[in-house]
Image 1 (spheres, one colour):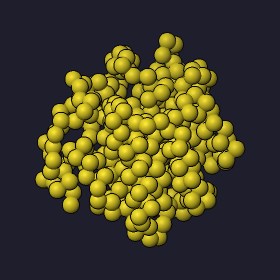
Image 2 (cartoon, rainbow, N blue to C red):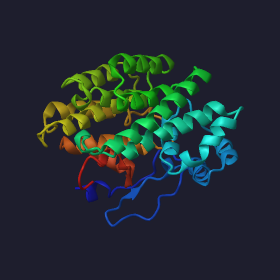
Image 3 (cartoon, helix red, strand yellow):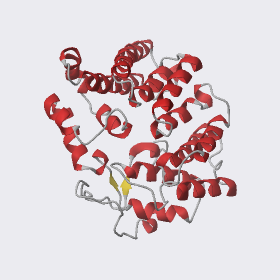
Length: 317
């Protein structure tokens, strides 16, 4: 089925001079999206990988790291950043908030790397110690970044993840969620993180995340990518369920169709760097729901671009 869906290739709206050319494809027509498919992000990640702070701050020119969590995520995933950014955090004056934000976000990811994705009962005492040590550093740095730049939303979104890992409870995490939405009521990353927070495995109630996602979609303007919250809520419902066919219902298919046409497939939707991530969210949710119509449009627009998340939930993506 995927081969047929990937078969039609046409001009993609919103293409620009900064878009990276698609690399050689696999036999199934797919390729892994790198650097959000953007030359400017590619330069940013190269500077981060080389530990070149001056080049990194220059490459950040086109981006607002305090509001663009997608670009921040790319930086936080660069291995080794934690090895060189410590002295920058201590010495930097002009870009101190930026250094704190990048370091804090990296320490959250680095902490989870120590914990691994194993079940809590399978995590060793040493892994827990390193996990919490790194998250405590992240908390300190992100809170200071938020204090230095009270207009930024991304520190609060990242504090939701560290707060969940530190088991800080609903009162603290709820306050952080509210702080993020005060700065941007439609911040996509904050909403997606809250969907995870509301899952039963993190103490939420069954159906709570989906109800939250539906309320968010009702407040979302047409063409806004926040519609992805519906796709993620359904994927998380599938992850939590013991039934692999839990999404294969007419109501779920209809809800995903409406959300996709309201957001990523709406004519007013604007594609920024990494827009393929949103399309992959819908691609997986629609696939799990055995939807046959809208999914063709989604895969056709992707033209083979694959993002690791959310497909990593599958044993054979």
